[in-house]
Image (tube, rainbow, N blue to C red):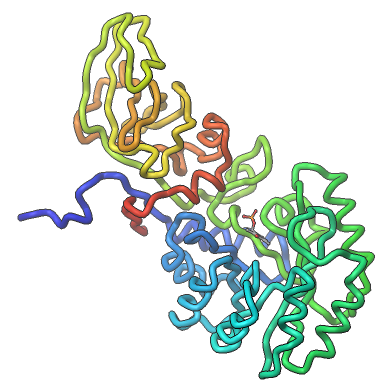
Length: 361
Ligand SMILES: *Cc1c(COP(=O)(O)O)cnc(C)c1O
């Protein structure tokens, strides 16, 4: 039987939906009593937004996204809980989309306050975002009282809460300073507050407040330096894997791949694997980046190509064309691969390419 063409390449990202739900339960343990916005921007951190939101719909309280289109699609799919749009409106006309689909807009600058205050319809839901030190999005703390008062007196606006974002979860004193600035704001006591993304959910209980906004940890990954998700009781959700498509023996002095960056010093057996930077494997990964071949630890050799990479299988006698190669997953934490490649797990996940097959188990 002829194969369906969409399945022709063996590069697959397998998404473990039970692990997603496990991680959501773990977040509830770490942040008891808090409501959870699951961050599913950037196509669910590369895991497939539809797959992730379906798997989590009954395990979290709301979803947080960047893309208004993703928010609308999620609402159309039947999810009835809160959907927070993290950059809010880009222009005044966007208010119609937010109201039509009952989306919550983050209002992070004075221009946005002007737009939403101008709105004369019914019940535009907003979160006011304050800058407590990251100097990215958020109104300055010095404007907080005025902006809060304007939003509260705007007839079309329903104020859902006040939020801020942490700049450096590996640095206690930076987090402490931001917490102090946030707590110094005159936020009405009944108003919901939100500050924590993954790193803060894991390490700083005082940031938990009413709503936490975890992303990376839902996918089983730690954003904190020198730890992996497993250290925090999380289960990696994605296994990114492919297969060997050819094998060869090379002699000392022979090089491998573009630029001849790796030169063998002894006879070696080398496997060529389908999967390169056009699939989302980082081109910055140097020779020596860890992989698992047939479950056995090994390493990449030479430069990563657009569609392929090479791995050392000198010590793995079982390898044939068709043998599985895991780029990252439960047995090989993405944190280790990101470190070797000089990037972050966030970057690796968000580069998973559209041509990679997403499968769920
Ligand atoms: C992406 C994002 C999050 C989630 O961050 P993680 O580090 O992945 O947990 C939370 N809040 C905001 C504002 C974000 O943009």
